[in-house]
Image (cartoon, rainbow, N blue to C red; front, side):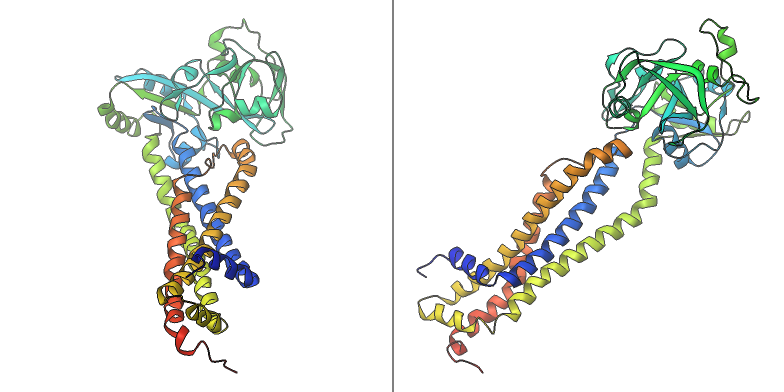
Amino acid sequence: MRAPLLTLAWKSLLNRGLSVGLTILAIVLSVTLYLGVEKIRSGVRDSFNSTISDTDLIVGARGGSLNLLLYSVFRLGDPTANMGWDSYELVASAPNVEWAVPISLGDSHRGYRVVGTTADYFQHYRYGRSRPLELATGRAFNGLHEVVLGAEVARLLAYQIGDEVVLSHGVGEVSFADHSGHDFAVVGVLAPTGTPVDRSLHVSLESIEAIHIGWDTGMATRADPGEDADALTPDSVTAVLVGVNSPIRVLGLQRQINTYGGEALTAIMPGVALSQLWEVIGAAETAFTAISLLVITVGLFGILTALTSGLNERRREMAVLRATGARPSDIFGLLVLEASSIAAAGAIIGIIITQVGFALVSGAVRSQYGLDLGGGFGLSEMSVLVAVTLAGALLGAWPAWRAQRNALADGLSIRL
């Protein structure tokens, strides 16, 4: 052929702009849906898996392991009960326990959870691949009425070192039970982690006790920083993060805690609990992925339908090409090239729309839910582009074979 196949394919597609545009639109929508589902799925998994690391056990009151994991690590839901301080001390002093960090939940500030803990929290808590918490500015708390903010809290509420905040009882975004008279000074802001830590306020356990003195009687009072430390020792905590000095001791310690007769406790391994979580939602993930693949399949078959239905109208075109020197293989290659071009165009546009859409909403999702929905163009996008393009070429092979077979036989006769 005198003219390159690519030029002919381009002009042919432009000549059938409406039908080609609708076919590309179907591919765009299907690819966007598929990539959207995959990005959300992988983003949720990666964010959950990177939230906590190097913590061997999480101990709390007897209950479901998933519930314990969600409220102690991800700040989702509420505990059914607390565990006693005596039980915490027993766990912390157990053989092979290297460190134990108690946490106390139940208060909030403008919808953000307050975590009562000890200074060891900043030393032992790890996220991602064993990354420690770091202070972007300021220092850790070392007394009453001092608070260390997560990065998102400080950024969204525009707090700085030296500002004062008032905590609220309960975890709702709107609270009518503020701990008035207990202003907390901001002494530190943590560096961003991409985890629920960014959306938390951290205070000492003694501070949690101080703001609740007299709370049950409705006569809450302010505790002096110099008040006897024993008076501010908590009666209970929500959960305990535990690190063991030897991995082979974890299962034995877990069994001892779960069978402890002094109090009904549950000890879970975070990795195992996360695996259970994925098993629970695995069916939904599979269903969404299957639906997305089905939509892509329907969109690709639109290419087959468009090319096949247009063969009658293009018989004369094919015959003219044969008459001007085109070989049957040229006809076949032209239609396959058109089909793969339609598929590739739809895939590229779908990928671009997905990237732009997630770039626009990722910040809000990260700040609201602590989920990182992934970065830019990667292996999944490249795989989709290649797979969709090849599938389009394969589906275009059938009408291409018919066209090159019939072009010279009946293309010059005008059918009425």
